[in-house]
Length: 297
Image (tube, rainbow, N blue to C red; front, side, top):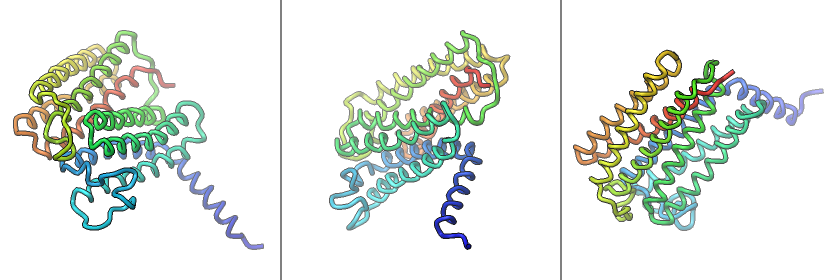
């Protein structure tokens, strides 16, 4: 008897699942990259004043998910950014399928990241419905940073080398550095919410003086750099910890240079976009440093 179409479909499905399982590592890396790309494209939305290019949610505009009528550049940019959510969903679902054979943290993280995508979309929808309230927009960005950290955690479990736990002093300092880094990221959203790139020319600002919060943000960055440098020196004998803390320090220094340039040149959109990419890399580096202090068998 010949093979039925149902059997062929079943074989193709099993083959697809086997392929995904065999490529778990690159899929988790793709998951991380996709979430970092979303941070950058979200920055493009804000920097081009396209935050209300699709003025409603979940529809792009009244009467449909897809924009209709005259297609402005702002509408195109915002709609494209929304469509990237489906790319994230596809990658996240592939990771869940690939990770399903693993028990414990691998499976839980894969599921958590996949569930975080619709939650992130809802926060983005609320930001649109509130006409880009700066505090909701800030939450939207910080949620993306949290997703980046979860993706780094998953990559660490499936890909990183075996290692022993770091000493208590190093582990504590890594956690303090992580917390300080998140204060820096949050203050960055406060600076953005007070400045000209709030997502739409008519959107509300948070009312803070941009110069004042920019200086406060810079002081927090100084503290973060000092903590990271201290961590690098304390962990110098551990090659792996030295590598990840050194990489984080380089990212922070470059991020500081970009931040200074954008402040001195009047916040040009391209430089601000680089700064947002640096923020995503910083979030990833902060998570990486904390994870590097934990044992992996």
